[in-house]
Image 1: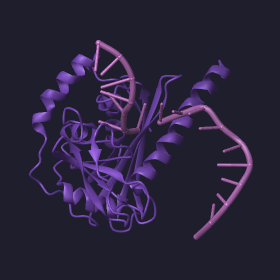
Image 2: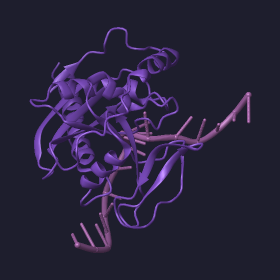
Image 3: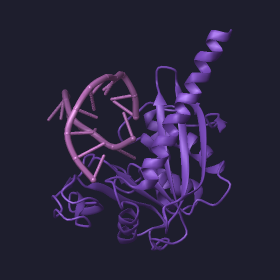
Image 4: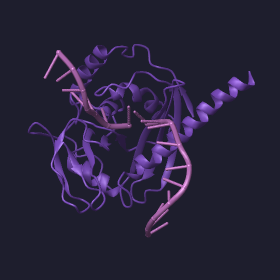
Length: 238
DNA sequence: GCGACAG
DNA sequence: ATCTTGTCGC
């Protein structure tokens, strides 16, 4: 576990954050198909919060893409770096997520984020932002459609429908379990949308959400419990 | 103008 | 995201 300091010059206002998005957005690479599904490694990242104590914990869990076995994992804790503002989620999550990724003992391969990539009001959601900062291929898998419109995909697992901002397809609603609410997939960086959806299907043999997300979620929650536990123990001990 | 809005 | 018991089912 590593402890994170909020980077110097980190945006302090919504206006500054939007300016950063507009500046970095031009660096997103869209003409690469990305790593082939089922090969190499796939890493899930997630973050948990205790706003009460101003503590944030992130986890990165590396899976073998073929077997979905855990190959490596790392966590990081720090202070909350930004309030939750729809459209600016990345500024809340990224410092701690970056630290967790850097603490990994091996390359992460494709990174799967909780939330959106290009499906974003400014076309620069968390997955795109993390991709540009790390240079890694990334995708976003969200549980909710945010502000976007979509037609219900067919009932069978694997069915998709466009996720629409007006007439622009910014992502895809993807059914990962028969008859269950779809997930919302969008490209982050250095990956194509077809490939991103194929990865998500490969990562959902048993549950609605990708194994990467499930494992990272469990790990960051336990890291948060450990971190806040230390705080209260320190308080009691002196 | 107001509200809704990834996590 | 988070607050939260028991409960149904594989």
